[in-house]
Amino acid sequence: MFALPFFRRDLPALKGDRVTLRVPLTNDYREWSVLRGESRGFLEPWEPRWNPDELDRTAWRHRLSRYREDYAQGTAIAFFIFDKSSGKLVGGITLGNIRHGVAQSGHIGYWIGERHSGRGLMTDAVKVVTRFAFDTLRLHRIEAACIPDNARSIRVLEKAGFRREGLLRSYLRINGIWQDHYLYARIEDDPPGAGTKD
Image (cartoon, rainbow, N blue to C red; front, top):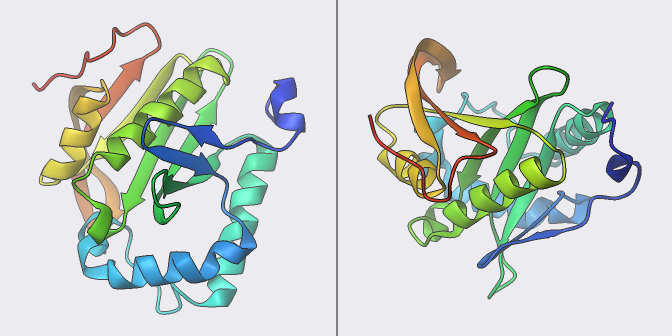
């Protein structure tokens, strides 16, 4: 359970320069399923293998239930990302594996619809979630893992001030294959723009 009083009430929307983040709602299903469906080929190389019912309404209800359960237990917070100028859903970002105590850390994962990529929206979303993690949740360290071939994701993390710390061998099973990942991290007191390449 989150120890902070903040989590005893509804989570407000988070605002960046170009995006607004809020928790997914039941009536987001249609927009989410259309965006994910049309972006499938773009997303699949970087995600766990899709289930046959990935975009079905029943799977959507299970997904929402898991999001709510993780939030209630204080282990993760899922956000949908909306373009501020159009109000359209463009992707999602999750702050997960949240640990307090001596760790004070969390891990971010994200996705963006193909037609919205390359516009700086994800970089803004990562910055907003990182700020929220440090300022509101009082975490000390935020991590992200990235497949070495995913140049777009590497660019996002480095622009958001994350630093590459090493290579995690056979770290996550992505699209049915165990894949190496670069580990990126940002520490609470890192100066803005501190992202670097090895």
